[in-house]
Length: 242
Ligand code: NAP
Image 1 (cartoon, rainbow, N blue to C red):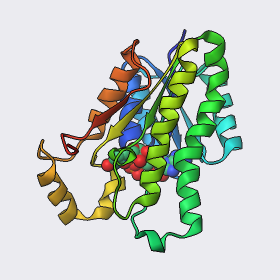
Image 2: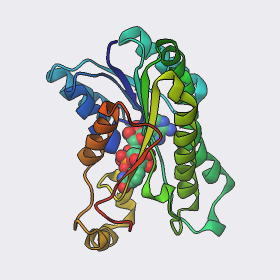
Image 3: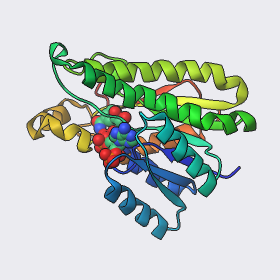
Image 4: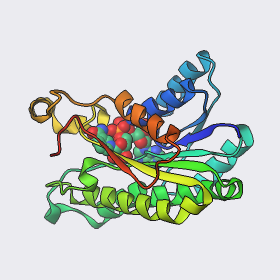
């Protein structure tokens, strides 16, 4: 079957690195973004220049209808999706008492319901073919609590629950479901922490630095290629968590 991947939230950061790594490995890739069309098109141009087959699609993963349109367009332009990387995610740091209802709901809508929408949208042809691969991007805060990030941490715990449940349910069909739990990775998302905190975190990380988006992409590629691996959560954090 043709290798066709959808990487959600791949205009920037970890998603962009995953899309680039997959393209280099011969995958046709749908690059998804919500606002930064410029970044998505810039990446697409670079990948096309290197010989890659790429489609750019705007869609808010929280919006089921938009996701279904994106998946349909991908099927038409590239072929049936055989790899889904649920990467799109948002975060907000605040004390639990200050969390507004709309913030809590939005972060769940993007981080958890986004996975639900995208997975349901791509699953039909995978079930038909008895093959396919899903990689969910969780976080180290998906297995440990994070102070002032209760919403984010709860969504990342949910992603791990979804990964393990779906892996068990889909294993008899040959579809594999795994997750990556990144530590602190140097992307736009962590810039809100400020340089002083990032420097402190780098010192706290046994490998002595923040992770690079490419290092998460390496693990995604491994999960894609490891054919006897399902239901696993791989932590990539430079040794940060004990
Ligand atoms: P980032 O630099 O903030 O990039 C976020 C990406 O997601 C962008 O491409 C953005 O699109 C897209 N996006 C945001 N909301 C979306 C939505 N509703 N629908 C579709 N796309 C959406 O984030 P990142 O650091 O690369 O993080 C990627 C994933 O890794 C997230 O799930 C995050 O939770 C997880 N993670 C990150 C870290 C870290 O330290 N960075 C650690 C652990 C886990 P636009 O460009 O259009 O805005």
